Length: 253
Image (tube, rainbow, N blue to C red; front, side):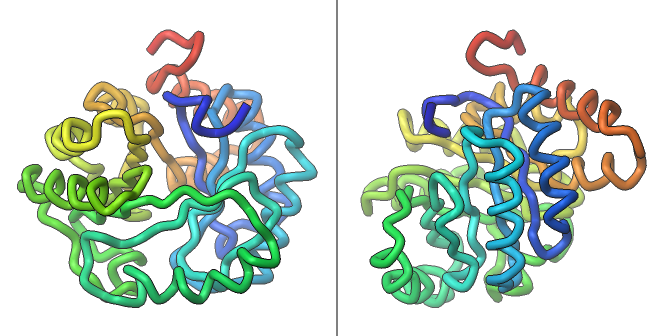
């Protein structure tokens, strides 16, 4: 079953710049055991070798479990994934992340025809400067202007993008507000809607799903659980709580 066929669900983001392959294997096993819909691999920083190694380790640890790439640049492309989110930072005005990285990706994708999903990426103010903002040199949209986020989502749909990713950024102090998610959901009915950044507790994941997110993405919350709990079962319990909060096929939210 492909990733998109598993919606709605929880996605666990693994950052290869902060996660060694052995740790990534562990997270992947626990995510699958907890009932997550799949994994995302991605970072705001370049690191071809790290991304490749982590992707390969995950593939070997959880064969058949959906793995998608959430790339910060063309340098992070790997064919050890099932899907590449072909992200265009539509909330920003930096041409590098609107089109230039996509052009740089063409030679790789010609050699390795990994399936891609054109995705409009919308960055929302999460209360602090995140890596995405610093690296891309783009300002996030204000969190109290849902109509502005919806306009960007609509523009992305009209251009022809096939998914929307609304993000507060890794380590954000607060998640994307429910009214922003709801406005984007209404703007792009039928398109896959990913929501992440700042989601630290299952209640926040439940709120994102209730507002219309198809996929709720957590990353830092898993890293915190990993660093604070030695036993894998404890991390699995944490992930299971998020999975139950989001719900999914056969899972009551």
